[in-house]
Amino acid sequence: GNSVTQMEGPVTLSEEAFLTINCTYTATGYPSLFWYVQYPGEGLQLLLKATKADDKGSNKGFEATYRKETTSFHLEKGSVQVSDSAVYFCALLPNTGNQFYFGTGTSLTVIP
Amino acid sequence: DGGITQSPKYLFRKEGQNVTLSCEQNLNHDAMYWYRQDPGQGLRLIYYSQIVNDFQKGDIAEGYSVSREKKESFPLTVTSAQKNPTAFYLCASSRRTASSYNEQFFGPGTRLTVL
Image (cartoon, rainbow over all chains, first blue to last red):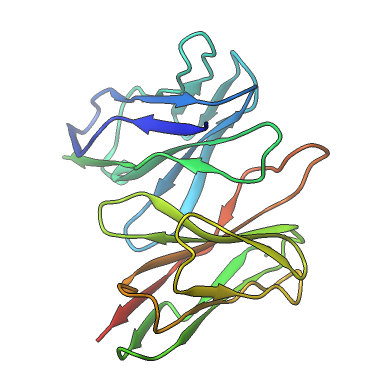
């Protein structure tokens, strides 16, 4: 079946620290992979995506590389800011499906 | 601007009452989805619809109902049969491609509280 596993939170970092949030997946075929961000009291916003193996998605300093050999899509940012404090969700869409599969979310707090 | 609107943002309901949450999109997307989010938890799929007048149950459909009479609209009714309806409800939509769908776009959410 299809599923997404992401690292448990909460994660607390100091400003300008390096961020990694791990995400691994199980899927048949070649899914598309996504990272979404949710700020308090709001809906989810697409942060970045990758649709095939070895693709790198990037946006606002965040990056994630689609690694088929390790079935992973880890989110990274070189220098986090207080404004990056939010909940981050990893998600997959099977290549022939219509249903998304979300991870449980990882809460990030960045302190000045 | 294209997007998804949900109303109201906050909703209070007495036990035993049905309540309907609105979701409208002007993105011309084919598929629409309803999710429930509880504090500190991920998203759970309630219902989804790929075309007008058709919808499928998700993982937690019991106590909920939907309709899809127009492409732009996908209202969710939380019925009195839903035992624990207090939660944050998110609506999403996505565009169909030749073989699958594109990424989902989300509305701002409705926070439902049962008094």
